[in-house]
Length: 449
Ligand SMILES: *[C@@H]1O[C@H](CO)[C@@H](O)[C@H](O)[C@H]1NC(C)=O
Ligand SMILES: *[C@@H]1O[C@H](CO)[C@@H](O)[C@H](O)[C@H]1NC(C)=O
Ligand SMILES: *[C@@H]1O[C@H](CO)[C@@H](O)[C@H](O)[C@H]1NC(C)=O
Image 1 (cartoon, rainbow, N blue to C red):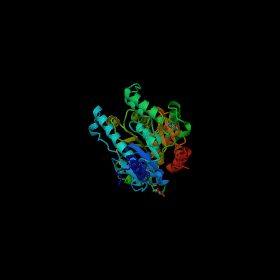
Image 2 (cartoon, rainbow, N blue to C red; image 1 turned 120 degrees about the horizontal axis):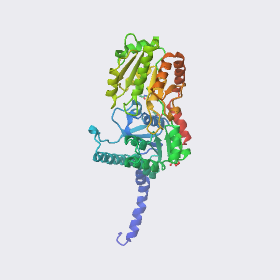
Image 3 (cartoon, rainbow, N blue to C red; image 1 turned 120 degrees about the vertical axis):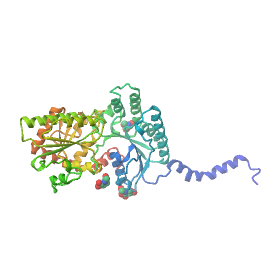
Image 4 (cartoon, rainbow, N blue to C red; image 1 turned 60 degrees about the vertical axis):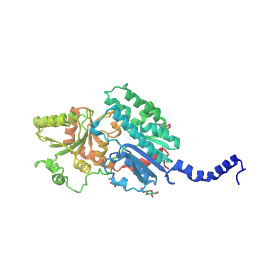
C-alpha cells in the first residue's frame, strides 16, 4: 500500500520515528556512557596506585564530597583498604608491559607507549561524560596530550604538577637541555599545559615557575601541599620508647646492651634510594667528624644509632665504607623495611635526616613529610624551595655540607631544649592534615563550593 508513497516521505517518517530513540538512548549512550547523576572525576596516574599517596588522597577527598571517582592506574600491589572499600571509587587497571630485565630498547619503549595509549583511549571512552579529569605531571607523555584532546568532550582538565618531566629527563642526560628527548618533553609540557583548565602545584616555587615560564593564569593555579599519610603518627607519649626498641622484632637486634635513649642516646634515620643526587657520603662524613669530636674533645657525646633505609645502585659502596671504619660512638645500620614497619621505625627515632636535592629545584621530598607526620624534627640538606617545608630552628635544622651537618648533629644530640622546642612545633603541625587543606584549595579554584 506504500507503493506510490514517495521515497523521501518514507525517509522523513523513519527519521521522525528515530528521534526519540536518538534523544533518549543513542545520544546519552554516546555522550554519557555509564555516568550517573553525580559529579564524576577521572583520576589518572601512570604509576602504581598503591604507591601514589597523593592520588589516593585526591580520590578519597572527592569521594567524601559524594563524587563518583574513577581511579585509573597500574595495580602492582594490593590496593589500600581505604580505596578498595570505598563505594564511590572505582579502580580501573591500565595494562602495563612488564619491564622485564630492564629492557630499554627503542622498540620496547615504542611498544609500551602504543599499548599504553590504546589502553588509555579504551578507558576514556568507557568513562565519557565525566566532569573533570585529574592527571599527575610527570609523566606528561603520553597522557597530557590525550587529556587535552579529551577536553573536547566537555571534560575539564586539572593538572597536578609534582615536578617537571623535562627536568628529570635532563638530569638523566647529564644536564643536556638540547637532547631531543628533553626538548620534546619540554615542548609537550609547555604547549599542552596551556590548555589545562586548572593547575595544582606542590610548592609555591613551582607555581611561580609555571606562571612565569609557561605563562599560566595565576587565578587558575593553586598550591596544594602534600601531607603525610595517615599511617605516619607520632609515638604515643604513654609508652616507654626504650622498652619498645628492645622488644620490637625488626629493631631489637640492632640495639646493643649499653644503648639507652633514657640516658640521652639518640636514634636517627634517613631513607634514600642511593642515587647520585642523594649523597649519603655527606652523612657518613659528618658522623666520622662526630667520632673524632668524641675521641678528641668530648667523651660525653651521646651514642648515635643511625638507620639508613632503602635500596639502590650505590648501596654496596657505602656499606663497604661503613664496614672499613672503626666506629666508637656511632653505629650505622642499613635496613630494608616493609611498608608496615617503616612508619613504626620512624616513630621510634629522634631525628630524621634528609639528603634529598631536587632535579627541578621546585619540589619537596615526601619523606620529610612522613618524618614530620611521625613527629620527628628533620635535619635537612638545604636547597632553595625547602623553606616552604622546613624552617631552621622551627621544625628542623638545615645544613649545606658535612661540616654544618656535624654542627647540627652536635647541637641536636646534646641540647635537650632544641629537641623539645622542635618537637613541640612538629606535633602542632601534624594536626594540619590533608582534608581541610584540600577543600580549601579546591574552593580557591572554585571547583567546589
Ligand atoms: C559516597 O557518596 C555519598 C554521597 O553520594 C556520601 O554520602 C558518602 O559519604 C560517600 N562515601 C564515602 C566513603 O565517602
Ligand atoms: C584510611 O582513612 C582513614 C580516615 O580517613 C584513616 O584513619 C586510615 O588510617 C586510612 N588508612 C590507610 C591505610 O591509609
Ligand atoms: C592553568 O590554568 C589556566 C587557567 O587559565 C589555564 O589558562 C591554563 O591554560 C592552565 N594551565 C595552566 C598551567 O595555568
